[in-house]
Image 1 (cartoon, rainbow, N blue to C red):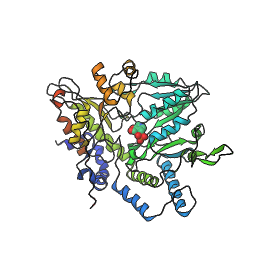
Image 2 (cartoon, helix red, strand yellow; image 1 turned 120 degrees about the vertical axis):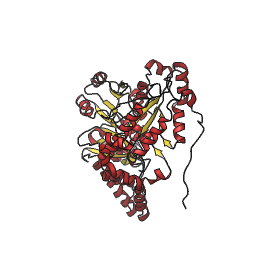
Image 3 (cartoon, helix red, strand yellow; image 1 turned 30 degrees about the horizontal axis):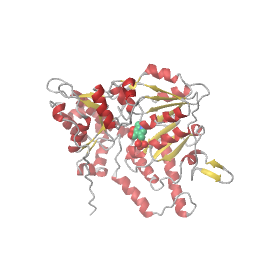
Image 4 (cartoon, rainbow, N blue to C red; image 1 turned 30 degrees about the vertical axis):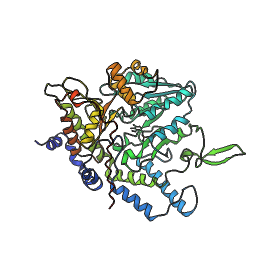
Length: 487
Ligand SMILES: Cc1ncc(COP(=O)(O)O)c(C=O)c1O
């Protein structure tokens, strides 16, 4: 039986996602034309060519001015920004009376809006999961500086799901009448784990405001904000549909927004301000959070991208991603060196229950020595495969995955500042441990051939020793194969 037949036999629902093959041929033809195997959808989504065409058409056929004015070109732009904002809410089924959509630069700047304005005081609490992106971890520094406490809820290897007992203890820490903020990702950008959205209501009932990081979840899962009602939802649009970059969003419950105390005001966020009157009034709702001029020419492209996803149906994308991730995990897990030693150790769930299309693993040789991740990336680069290595800005999940304890990690924060490469080297030298892994992630434009290319590449490591494969050699090497031929 051919690998594809075996795949279809294991994942028959893949056959229902044929539309995505048509789109791959039409809207993502550049992947095959340039022989790129793109497995970094958790890093960034890919845009469809038609999104660019639609955006270009809009820009080339209209004249748009800064939406802060009242002239015709400005009003035309204001209409499109308002329309895109309304469509963002519609896409996430967020009742406009309950939720505001604040345009930001990316998920991180959406998180920073919350971080700097959440009214942390001594006695307040910030609860967060080990499994979080650094931009969520960074909020703890605001909590710390304002005298609030913070507590981390660990995840448990190898599946890297939440430690239920620690979670229950953490959730019990909310003090009545205090400001309590609980942050977790709907989907891990490290392991692909999808943490239960039921946690939102559970935390609310115990007195927490809830920040749900949807950056890695939204690209291939439905987030229905009429059903789930987190207070703050940061996301980046390029992760969902590739283009435009530089635009994200904070979806915020209007009631939660009222609690935030912005530390400053800027052009665009106020009704009036005065130098001599020494005062200002913030615009209520989203307007009070969008500093300066928004990315107004880019914002209509958000609506174009969201409509593109809506026309496909996120359930189909979800099915496709699940089938491809399932096959990748199954086949990688089955790979063994001739002596029976497994090629990989998966960091995350091996089944498809409550997990997305992010697959992270460490690779081992026949003697159980770990291959250098940097070298794997380097070899993958030469095979035209874009994957990612490192800790993916999610140190907490990585520390648990690699068995690194608080004592070990504290050790690296006593002295001089280190780069990630230096941390890797020191960790190896002093503790014989790794801090880095290999991440492969699939998305809307992925197909069976992409996953098969990765499996062929991985099979090429079989029966080689880590010594033979060697360490990452060309840290200065840059693969810069951009096709600039516009003729
Ligand atoms: C789960 C998660 N949260 C937040 C972010 C931050 O997104 P951005 O870099 O677009 O601000 C990322 C980016 O990878 C992510 O995966």
